[in-house]
Each structure stands twice: as structure tokens, then as C-alpha cells.
Image (cartoon, rainbow, N blue to C red; front, top):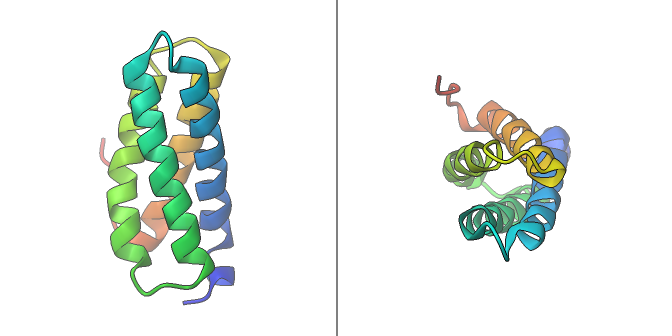
Length: 109
């Protein structure tokens, strides 16, 4: 599995990590739970990016865990009306949708 096969997933992972890092920094002082979830999500998305970049055979297993974390982060961020939280939630949802393409799992209603 080469990284070029999953360019859209790689792009979504790095975008999500970037948005989560920004959101965590903005929320750290007044919304600690949001910041914690964003930091967790950013870390796992950076990890997914690395696995995809090197074409790891473990990508499907890693993205399955990442879907759950991205969904939890999106759910938390959607509670807040800040622009950075809304951008983060959108990036998390997009990443989770891209991860599903290679994880072989359907969206949860």
C-alpha cells in the first residue's frame, strides 16, 4: 500500500491534526475538555499521517481507532460556537469519513 493510494486520507489527516492543534491552543484556558480531546485527536492524526506516508500495512487498524477519537473530538467541538471549534469539528468529521474508506467500517448514526 503506497502513500499515493491514499492521498485524500493523508490530506484529511494532516488538516485534522492542524485544526485540532489550533483549537486545543485556543481552548486550553477555558475549555479544558475540548483542548484535551483536540490534543488526542491531533496526535493520532499525525500518527496516521506517518503510517500512510510510509505505506504501513497497519493503516487499517490505526484508522479504526482514529475514527472513534475524531468523532469524539467533533462532538465536543460542535458544542461550542467559536469559529476554531467549528472548523475543528468539520475537519474531524472529514477525516473520520476518509478513514472509513480504508478501514472498512460504516458511519455510525
